[in-house]
Structures are given as structure tokens and as C-alpha cells.
Image (cartoon, rainbow, N blue to C red):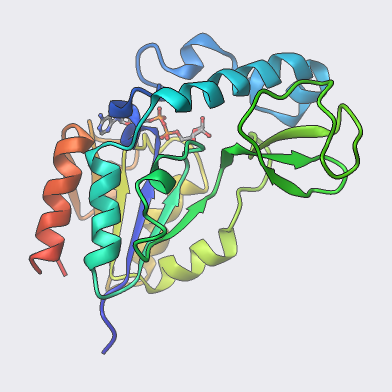
Length: 241
Ligand code: APR
């Protein structure tokens, strides 16, 4: 009998208390920008400078943001849980990475890409990227300007790591969704995939019930920096699985 496998989906709510704006809360990113202008392949063709500016601003904000107690609790879970821990994040920030989730044995998949990476539109090669990007920035692989794009999955594009995500959902014993409104697929459908494997217990941890709250066995509501460490403590105490 192997130790139970835990799959955790996170959304913008897990980084909210680190000072990073969510998308659909009051004053969220989609209150101040139109998705069609900054988060689609068509937007990038139509006005690449506007798209670059949107992601340059968000990348620069990461310098002021730090992992919070929720990120650290998930890293603690990954280091102390005997079974496997997979974190699938919709977030493009690097706060799970900086919370040392990976170094503590957890597997981390950024299904919507990462602000700290760039991609060549011609070769699809991906590069670490920490500075502003503009239409004049030469691509590191082909040295041509105008080919570099943020390594972000835009609306209408296929999220990353889907094969591996579906594999772990099919075999997990505990599925936890943290800080997501459940508005965007395929992530919003992960709870259904986890429940298709009868043994999985499914929990939503959020500020308020999400669109898909009725699909979960259990809901815990409140700020992630309080609810996530408390729930991790219960898991490690053997109270959950
Ligand atoms: N603690 C816990 N939950 C919180 C907190 C907090 N401190 N603050 C906000 N939340 C919750 C909100 O109640 C909301 O349900 O986080 C959720 C954030 O929802 P969204 O803003 O819709 O963000 P998310 O679900 O991550 O969006 C998914 O949509 O626009 C795309 O690609 C983008 O990855 C993003 C995807």
C-alpha cells in the first residue's frame, strides 16, 4: 500500500495576501484590462506593445511580493508528507517556486505558464526571463526582434502539462483546490476528474464558495494564509487521509 497521493490546484487567491491582484475580485486584473486586449494570441498580433507592457508590469510586481503562509504550508506538506504531492498552479507568479516547494520534494506544474519565462514564437524555445520585454527585444535563440513573447498560456491556447495533470488526478487520494473562482477550464473541471476516481476526497479552500463549490465533498472558507496552514496541519496529523 503506497502512501496517499495529494493533488493541489491553486489560483490567484493563494497569492492575494502576498499583494498580487487576483483576476475577478473587486479591482482585479480583469476590472482594469480587457482579456481581449492583453491575454489572447490575437491581442499580441494586434498590439504587441500593450501585451508586453501588461506582463512587464506584472513581472516587475513580483520583486515586491513574497511567498505567504499558504505557499510555505504547501511546501511544508510536500517535505513532510510520505506520499507524493503535486501542485498544479494556474498562477504565473513564482511564489510557489520561491517557497521551495520543489526543493521540498513537491512537483510543481505552472499550467498557464510563468512570468519569469519567455518563449520564441518561431522555435518555441523557452528561456528564463527577469527583465522587461518589448517588440524590439532580440530573441536569444534567433537574435531577431519581434519574435519573443511572454511564456504565458493565453485564452484559446492549450494549457501546459495536461497529460501529466490528468494522470495524477486519476490516481489521487486527496484533491484540494485553493484560491480559484472555478471560472476557467480545464482547471475548473479537475474536481470532476478527481471524483471519477472514487477514492479521492475533494476539498475547496477559498475566500468564498466558487462556481464549482457543489462539486466538492468539503468547503473551507477564509483567507488562505489562515485556512491552508490549518488544513495542512490536519493532513500531517493524519486527520484527513
Ligand atoms: N484567500 C483565499 N481565497 C482568496 C483570497 C484569499 N486571501 N483572495 C481571493 N480569493 C479567492 C476569490 O474568492 C476567488 O474565488 O480567489 C479566487 C480568485 O479567482 P480569480 O480572480 O478568478 O482567479 P483564478 O481563479 O486563479 O483565475 C483562473 O483565469 O484569467 C484567467 O489565466 C487566468 O489563471 C487565471 C484563471
